[in-house]
Image (cartoon, rainbow, N blue to C red; front, side):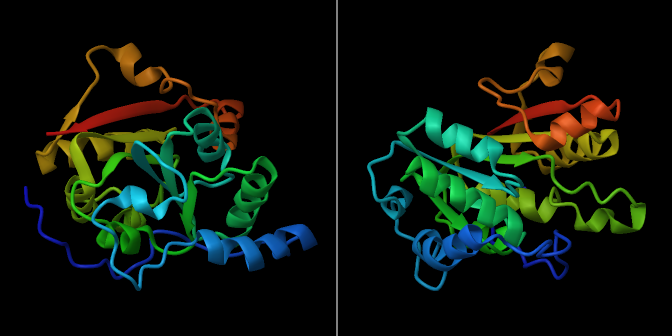
Length: 232
């Protein structure tokens, strides 16, 4: 195990960047709100990461690949004293989230619309309380497994930015990715899986709102696993 800055990956962990054309309101949100909420990675991160939020927060959480944004919006509403950083390269998903942020007047969210490894490398050491990686692209073909976001390189990144005792939470309905994550976290050595019995990984995280990906998995007959690892 090492906490040195890893070499940046050469392949993207995500696929397409844009889908159907944005609606007028979504396009306006991308034009006006995204520049205001987007992390400026060209400037050094503040030593106290809480300073990136316009309101006082007690904790900072990072969600990588927030998709439709249901989970991120729910958490930001229920925990107004927590600052959230949401990373999502897919334009349509970012536009949807920004519309909800504006509608609900949420002031505890910052975003980034490109590769999450760039954010991880920008963050200060021991600055994040929790990292959520929920239903990431499973890259099901074996030849594409190297694109899975969970890797030894990225676990080094996670371990560096998490505070002592910080949490890495992972959810997926793809058995091979669940097993992959368990093995990689075990081999890293810096993460302790919190499960003590089978119900611990079959039960959603506390306050879990569900996501469209989870609903799709259930419709297609797949169950989900919810893994929690603590930084040691």
